[in-house]
Image (cartoon, rainbow, N blue to C red):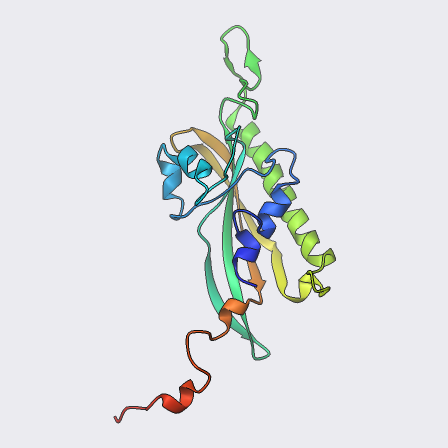
Amino acid sequence: MTELFLYGREDGLFKQVLNQSKVIAGRYHVSPNYGHDLNTNNLETFIKDPKYGLQDVAIKYPLCVCMTPSSRFVKINTIKWEHFSFTLFFLCNANQDGNNQIKKLDKDTNTSAQTVPDDWDAMKQCASDFLDILWNVTLKKSLANGAPLKSILNIDFDNAVIGRLTLFNNDKLNGASVSFQATMQTNCCAVTDYNNDVLNNITIPNM
C-alpha cells in the first residue's frame, strides 16, 4: 500500500468518496505544484490532462482540489507509519451553478444574487460531509484482505480546520478548505533501495 491509496487521482480513497457526492460528483483534481496551477488560466487543461487531472469533465465546477500533501515518518511499536497533512479545497464558481446557470438570477439586472457567504456555506457543507464520510469509511470498511481499514489508517477528525476562500484565481472561485491529518501504515516505508546485507557492507569512517 502506498500513499496514493489515499489521494490517488483515479481510484484513491478520496476519489472514491467524492464519486458519491451529489454536489462534487467525482470532480477531483490533485494539484501537482502546491496549488500554483490554480493561479493560472490553465487549470482546465490540467483537469482534462490524463496525466494530471480528470480524463473527461463536462462541467468544471464545483470541484475538489487536493493540495500537494506533506508527510513525516513516525515509529509506533517499532512499525513505521506515515503521518500526512492534507488540505482539500472545495470550490465553486462565484456566479454560476454546476449547470453553468446564473445563481439566484436577478431578472432586473441579469446578474447573480448569490453572496460570497452563501458559497462559503455550501462548500463548507461539502467539506464537512466529505470528512464525515471518510471518517466513517475508516471505522466501518475493510481492506480487500478482510483487515479492518482502521487497523492501518487513522483520520484525525477532531482537529480538522475549515477555511474560506473568496474570488480565488482567474475563475473567481469561492469555497472552503479543510485541513486534516491522517496516519497510515504504508509499504513505501520498507527498505527497497538497499540489499539485505547492507549493514555488513557499510564502513564507519575514522574520526
